[in-house]
View 1 (cartoon, rainbow, N blue to C red):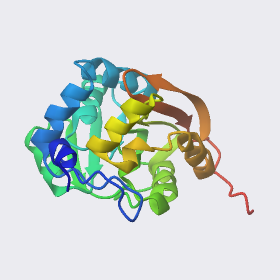
View 2: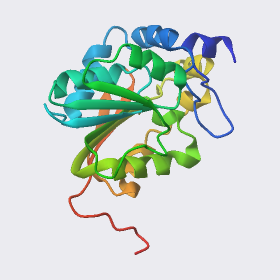
View 3: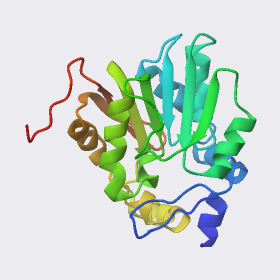
Length: 227
C-alpha cells in the first residue's frame, strides 16, 4: 500500500477486480473526508438527503455506509419515528459506526451485491462514495439489490466521486487514491440504475467532488429486456 493510500485509510488502488477496496482505518478516513470536503461535508450530505426525498418516519438504507456519516445525516431527517440502516463490507468501519450510532440507526456487515433484507423493505436507498469500491463485475448486482429492497415507488439516490477534468489535479488524485477514483466512470451510474429497472428522475453534481443520480422504483414490477 502506497503512502497516499495509507493516508486515506483504505485499500484504494487499481485492484484486479476494478474496485477501490475497503476502508481500513475509520478515524483516518474521517479526518481525510473532512479535509476533502473543505468544511462543506454537512452541507453536501444534507443536500443529498434532501434530494433523496427522505421524510420523517421513513425507513432508509445507506449502502456502503463507511463510517456512517451519511447515515447519521439521514437519521436526523427521518426522526425518531423513522429508521436508518447502513451496510458496509469493512468490519472496521461498521464497528466504528455502531459505537456512535443514534437510537434510530443500525449498522450491519454486508456487501452491496447481497443485501441482507427482504424485498420491499425500504422507502429510500442512499449511497455515497461507495460504488467505486464495488468490484466492477458486481456493480450490476448491487443496483439490482438496491432495486429489490426498495418498496414500489421508493427512491434511490446514488452519489460518487467525480474525477477532476484538470489533468494535473487528476494526476494528484491518482497519486493519493489510485486508479479507482482517478478514472471513476460516473457516467455509468444512470446506466446501472436504468438497467436494474429504475426510472431515472435526474442527475447532477454536488460541489466539491460528487456526481449523483436520482431514480425511482416503478409501482409496477420491472420486466427484464429479455421478456
